[in-house]
Image (cartoon, rainbow, N blue to C red; front, top):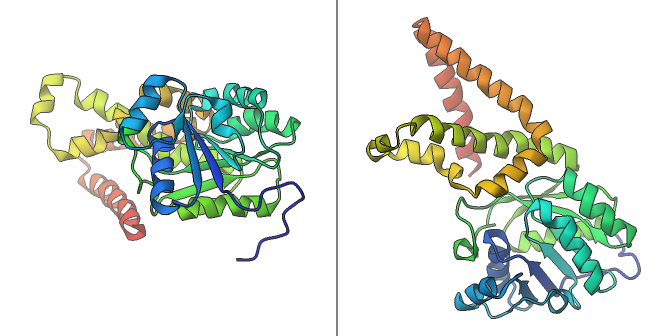
Length: 296
């Protein structure tokens, strides 16, 4: 692959990488780097000693509670923190200082808001921010749920709303590719519209499934794998998901109403004992679900 020339003062490779936040995504990035790119310098930042000790006990000694120590000399700084914390952490980064030419990215599930907040903040200080969204995760949280292979064959979407050189986008894309991800680039609004339908809507529906199917909690002891599969993502961290849903509410409302209409149609078909319509709905859902199997 041939990249355009890099602008003066910008890094041409990421050799020192700082991961801020030892949760499931930040921890998985750190473990993946250790497994796939052991030659790169890595430091993981935790806001408190308890989290840092948890990481050390898991066998990753490159962890600090000093933000200045974590980002000092870093070529790439990855903010693996909740979306509503990005701008605040960005201001902390400006206070401790960043090396010239550093690239900042995040791992958030929405992209319009980070570009409007953190991205604009960095732009005012001539610092590169390019959004990242690795489409991987777990309903579990914390470093203990981290997985070195989490990003293998996962989609990773990059957003470049501040029009930084394509060479920097390519460099960030190559970083994610080294961790095993399949990288795409799109606009932030297009990204939010896409994930509102394929990620955020399923989470809401999973939650509704849990609320409805387990209205009587004791019924759960009789459930099979179907209920566990359908409600699995409802086990995600509620505070994190509440923020995601609120940040992307404009892109979730439409798909939610469509889903409600589909449920209403099926309820009406059942009331009318319309076997043909029920069968058609089930066959259509089956056919669409099978397209996911073909992509695996």
